[in-house]
Amino acid sequence: MKNKPFWKEAPLLRLAFCLMVGIVIGDHVVIGWWLLPIFVGMVVLALLLWKHEHLQSIAIAACFVVLGWLLMQRQKASLQVTWPDGEVSYEVVVISEPVEKPKTMAVDVLLAESGRKLKCYLYKDDRSRRLKIGDGLHIQSRIESNSDWRRGSFDYRRYLEIHGFTGRTFVASWKWQKTRVSLVQLSRLERMRLTFLKFRSRLLAKISIQGEDADAYAVVAAMALGDKSALTQELKDVYSVTGASHVLALSGLHIGIIYSLLSLFVFRRRWQVLSQVIIILSIWAFVFLVGMSTSVMRSAVMLSIYALLSLGHRDRMSVNTLAFTAIVMLMISPMSLFDVGFQLSYMAVLSILLFVPLMEGVFTEEYLMSHRVVRWLWGMAAVSLSAQIGVAPLIAYYFGRFSCYFLLTNFIVIPAATLILYLSLVVLLMPPLAHILYNMVALLNSLLAKLAAIPGASIDHLQPTVLQVSMIYLIIGAIYLLAVKLTCIRANAGYR
Image 1: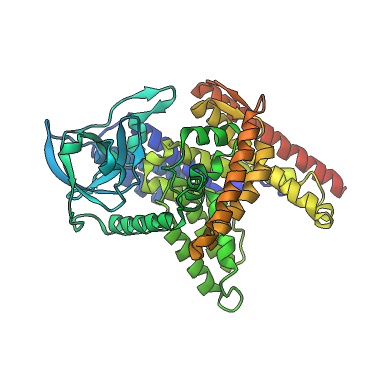
Image 2: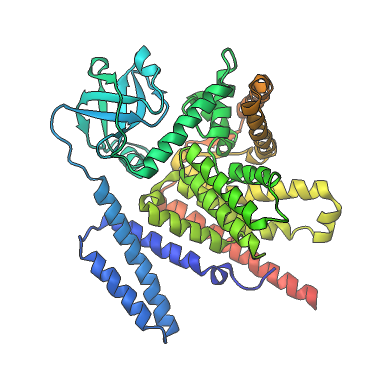
């Protein structure tokens, strides 16, 4: 165990925190264009203080605070659009699978002229049900600004802004029709993303089999290709109660499995650089394929750094690496800081990086090496417990729930998720084997449903405040520091 505290080994963690502080300030305080010269002045000041280490550190921290403020102010300005009063005619392209609501079909669309993203609600009928990603539509309707609707801790306007939506529209069935839409006005990135999404739709159609369990297909689509449009609320509740929701959202677990699989098929020893480049490109192609969600992009950035550092045989996974990915993600999209997925993803990984080394110290390395089953079981338990420590307060705040059987569930769903991803790849190559995949997923769903039905499977209706959640994390931090101190004392006593 190293005696050096993690915050001294991870200077980027402090910079990431300063960037987050600036983003929060920028969310509440807007001071206009002159924030840019302030930032430039802070950078110049930091450079001039090169002979004064502590003063320069303070100046650099201030630079990141102002940078976060500036980036947040810029992103909020880009989302503020004044839409015309009354109905207008416009052309859009569909960029998501239709999701059935009680009275409408909800689809995400891009305006062909400006590339702005809208949440579009079409009157539910056979035509709207048959829409596919890439379809062009000519619409006549009124575009509205994002609403301020709230339910508990869920802020709908914030949700739309985080995901880049600048407005929404409700369209009657006689006021839209399919048409050929030119995409030349869209950015190259958007066109490439749309190409990958259309390819994903074809893959989903390839693994879909008529007559199979709809819930089984929904889980396969979510786990393998990141499409959660087919998940029912009942199925989501089962996975939430049992603490298995994380396997439905593509994250580090899925990217890690794919990375391991790709590593088996490249020439790692003779052409190590080429193999890592191929793996990184493949991972990012998968990121585009599944829609570039926050958790997948975070995992892809981390794995890209992991692959590059592996060439130099350096420490590859660390708090510093995690902080660097957070800085990159927040500089691209500052509003991601308020995304529930972003917060859960980073808190889970941070907690794993901090607590797993402490838990591994319970058994000696010699004992674990000679008892491989114990090593696997304890490793799985340590990772599950560590991740839960990091995300439990946030889950209680956003979803009002604590899953009591999360440890047991992870021993089931993590090996199952690995097998499902491998089988999904096999099914894409040999579709007739899809029955085996769906039967296995149906068995998993049935098992989780039985776990969810056990009394005391979850504690519901939790309503902690922001202050209470902050205090819980302070307590967790204090416990971590105490554990580190005790571990160091025990290590020093052992040397004596």
